[in-house]
Length: 137
Image 1 (cartoon, rainbow, N blue to C red):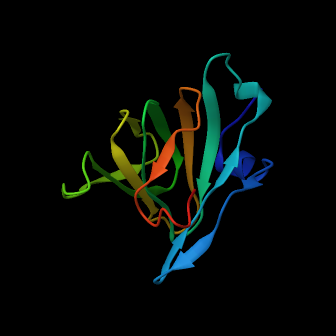
Image 2: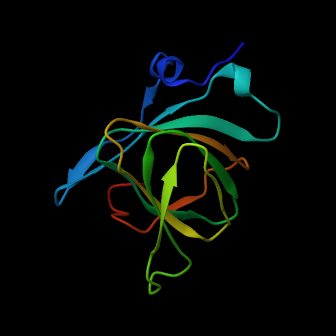
């Protein structure tokens, strides 16, 4: 059986992604894709956003993403254009949200520990970073 409690989440084989601190903001996250979650035709993985870390503002040209918050809490910021103000939504364990193609999004961990997300998306590598694109390619 595959469990997704805090203790089991901490014990998974998290792959280091990209971490950088710019202007006092810590960017980066870890990913894990347990084989028990594999579904043909979909990208399913777990995302760990460490304390005080941010997933930078970005969008996907063609992919749709759906997230479930497994543990922790944070702020989801969304917008459709660079000129639009960011809409902030508090996210907590149990919340589910969908990001549409072209929708810019950014996630900040506001927990006292790690923020864990379950992510399901369409296949493809079409992330376009609008926040520090020179760093996140």
